Image (cartoon, rainbow, N blue to C red):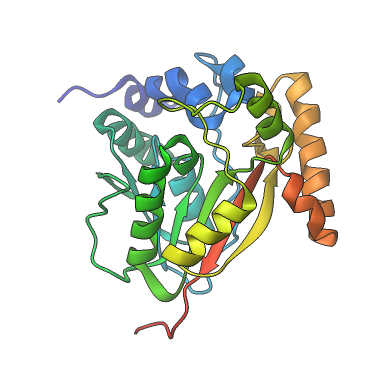
Amino acid sequence: MPEAPEDQGARAGGPAPVDSFVQRNVGETCGTPYWSQVGRLARYPIPKFRLGPPTAQGQLLLDVGCNWGRWSISAERAGYAAVGIDPSVEAVLAACRVARQLGARVHYLVADARFLPFKPRVFHLVFSYNVFHHMAKRDALASIAEAGRVARSGGMVAVQMSNRFGARGLYNFLRTGGREPKGREIRFWTPRQLHRSFSRLVGRPRFLAEGYLSLNPQPTDLDLLPVKWRAIVRVSGLLRRLSDLCPLLRWTADSLLVIVRKTGATPP
């Protein structure tokens, strides 16, 4: 099999170019701030893992809806044994290429978030970012239930979701007249809806503010973003830190990280 251009660049000793799939899809996978980088990425936008390192080296993490693998690689760098799933064959193949190029030991497979191909209580952490809020509510609920099923007792489920009461959620509601979203349009959930759904399907959740004025602001990517978006990311980071001191601010965040610790003792 002939080598991909990315592998040829690495073998030639120069910096390997960013995979063509990532170049084409970075706007869709990483969000609005990255649309200016489509076809122009100088490096991979791999974020810092939001939840920090595992409590023990090599704990299993499942990245649901991994696409080209940015969060899987982020988790692997934090110390997790990462597995990524996505329904797109093309995305999973790209994730394999990117992981190989960056030297990340991540396992990927093609799978549907609504029907995860794993036994119950396998993963220490089930993580999903910028995925479930694109789904029709019925599909999102099925995916949340599956995330809870494959998480170990004493493990954790962490899912990023969009907040109806954030600035973007309110603007979207006014712009669309409250019509039902279509296709991959973002569904904005109220904190009450999130609390009820996760409590019923997984366990009692807690919430962290994830982004303000943007659904996916990553401070590690400031060098990739236009000036306007650098300012927004910095403001978002400040508001996120303030929300740790004043929890009421969390309910005005544009995106929330919903975290559930499953009850029960961790099996050996």
